[in-house]
Image (cartoon, rainbow, N blue to C red; front, side):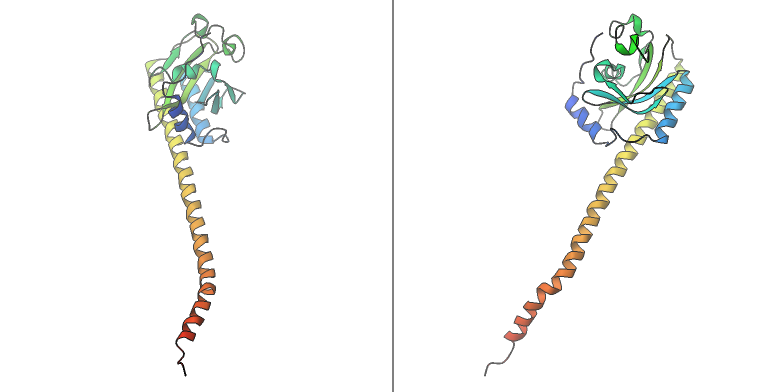
Amino acid sequence: MIRPKDHLREGERLASLKSYSVLDSLPEEDYDNLTNIAAEICGTPISLVSLLDKNRQWFKSRFGLGVSETPKEYAFCAHAINEGDDVFVVQDSRLDERFHDNPLVIGDPRVIFYAGVPLISEEGFPLGTLCVIDNKPRLLSQTQVQFLKALSKQVMNLLKLGKTNVLLKKSIDLLDEKNRELEQFAYIAPMTLNPLNDISSTSELPFE
């Protein structure tokens, strides 16, 4: 097995991933629908939305797989993100020196066939992949590849929408905080100004 190399700009890539506030979030039907469709179109028993953190690959959505994450050193997706933005295909991992003795190949879930499309952020960093997996060798047709690419774009649209919603919530929370501060000032200000008014009134009294 050959361990995957870190991305050339790994620090920036991880920062970009973190900005989406998606790691360890709860399952979402919209993502699950996309992995279900990907598995159906490609005829595979497994499909994943895999996001690559510092030391692990974490699955935002998983169809046909019970675990929620695996070590990054075993991740096919960690190889895929270093191969550009095209589909990364391994027809038979048992014949590939990068993967032939990978624990995910020789043990469950027996990743023999793999095809993954990198999920590219707005800044141009690969966050992970939308991938399909089989426990036997196979190839995808050009039509299947095109559908997989189209579905990967929909995954990115969901990630962007989630990021926008997080930023919007932060803006609303900040606005609420400012409003509370203004309300508090409006309550305190009259009490603070009253002694000043008394002083002003006293200063206007005529001297005898």
